[in-house]
Amino acid sequence: MPDLNDVFTPALGQLEVQQLLRRRRVAEPAGEGRLRVDGQPRLAFCSNDYLGLSQHPALAEAMRNAIERYGVGATASPLVCGHSPAHEALEHELAQFVGLPKALYFYAGYAANTGCVAALVERGDAIFSDALNHACLIDGSRLSRADIHVYPHNDLTALDRALSAHAGARRKLVLADAVFSMDGDLAPIPELLALCERHDAWLMVDDAHGFGVLGEGGRGSLSHWGLVPSRHMSRLIYMATLGKAAGVSGAFVAGSAPVMQWLLQRARTYMFATAAPAPIVEALRASLKVIEAEGWRRERLGALHDALRDGLAGLPWQAPASITAIQPLLLGDNGTALAVMQALEARGIWVPAIRPPTVPVGTARLRITLSAEQRMEDVKALCTALQDVACAIGG
Ligand SMILES: *Cc1c(COP(=O)(O)O)cnc(C)c1O
Image: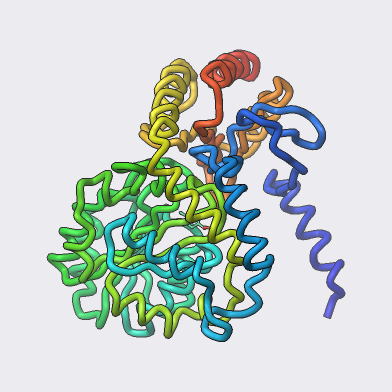
């Protein structure tokens, strides 16, 4: 057997040649949506901190106070050492916030999705998964050992056909991002629910990018679509992450009481992982209050969104429609995506280039994200810089 370095040094070289090698930057917040990146000040359009809550004083204060009461670590799995009064309260508040009977809080969205999907279905069952779903829904599907049927992005006709073709499966579970993470477009949840009803299937939606941003008071995608979640809980499972618009970390799954009880028995990423520290949980409880109370953050995001859309419209590259804070600019090949990213960086602006396997081959892009922390002139500066870059390197 070759030694480790003889295998991985050439493999890394190959990634480099394909322009697929990823590099981490050292970055820290510098106020008003700015970052200091490798020591250099940058206007940043890369975070999922859509409401700017990661820097909110009320959340920081809640976390500091909780450290006094709880210390910094949760010490064990919630099933071994219990969970804190803070955890208990957060789950109750999350369920109420999204209008479902029960919620289960996980230390990460990745863990929530992989654990839940694998707990809901098993060998002999069928999963129907949108082609652009997030990696952790895909990994959860693989872990479950159910048959996986991938349908083209948001193609309801194809999904309908697939559900008919596999009508005999024991359990049928449709999986979709509520807001697609690299495109910013929405899954048509009411139509998905109707299809699930017709085919006697269940629906799990991942609202990582809708929670806090869309819907009344930031209640997320179900509210955005005008759904009354409790009416659908016999076939709907809702999941959202809390490290994005909520500004902290972790995630939750919400639905009927028996389903949440089952996940507590069978979601291995919940059972066999140390709980998130209580100070994080108290920061999240404060975050829920701010999400609801500070509606101006969503309004500000809307205004920044409109200005950015105007600016993107004049560029030679495609900017697919997106009503959310995620605005993709499709550049096609990896080299162009990297060149545009670098040209922006030379102008003091950081927008990440997203390449395969995060997005399909040939759809490398800039993923521009907005935050209520940013100023209008920053968004205008980004649009001007993009126009300059388009002229300089040709679109
Ligand atoms: C970020 C993300 C996750 C993972 O959540 P983490 O809390 O970051 O682990 C899951 N689903 C989608 C759609 C995401 O964008």
